Length: 69
Image (tube, rainbow, N blue to C red; front, side):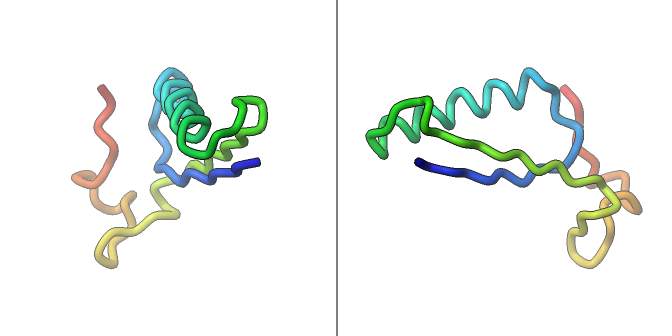
C-alpha cells in the first residue's frame, strides 16, 4: 500500500488538489502495480507563517505568496 505525503503551501483550490491526487494515483498504480483502492495520499497545507524561504517567513514577503490562477 503506497502512502504519499505532499506538503504544499496553503492557497490551492480543491479542484487543483483533486487533479493532483487523481494523477498521482494513476502514476502510483502504473509504476508500483497496485490498485487505486490501495493508494493513500496525505496533503499537509502550510500557512505562510509556517514556511520560510532564504530566512524570511513567506507571510513577511508578499513576493513569495502563491499567485492564484
